[in-house]
Length: 176
Image (cartoon, rainbow, N blue to C red; front, side, top):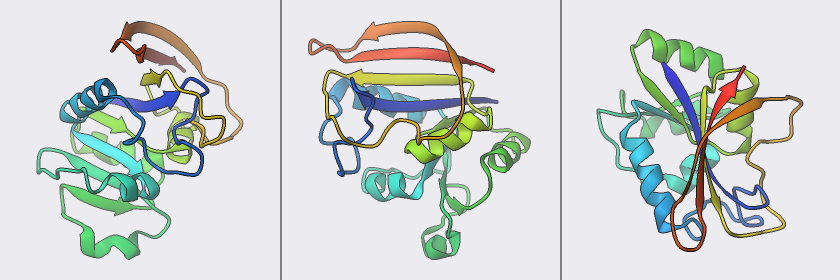
């Protein structure tokens, strides 16, 4: 199974603009198209509850794609669950990946905020990172990885310019 972390960031590494959540108001059309393709190519998508709260109005649930929302309080969301399509869990990243592997999922997309990204990276569960860099500087906002002690080495696989403004798509393999 392949686990991919995807994120869009400003040049200064922010995944939010100040205290605002979400990227829909500042991410380029090119990034949105690329992210939609990543979703279509994935069997399962993992995110945190804050990302879910921001993205749920854009989600198109399907029996072909499982979405797992990590939350400290899954009971709070039980009424929204759709088995095989939308689940809420407080399992560890390792337990989630183990379960998805047993269930024969082939490609898992981690599309969380900084906390979720840090949990999966620290647990050595990410093999590939797709990072879209938008030509913007926010100065304040959330980082792509929540502050936690770790060192990860990456190997650049490709860089591609996505539009005239200079949005860049960088793809990396994570070297464990």
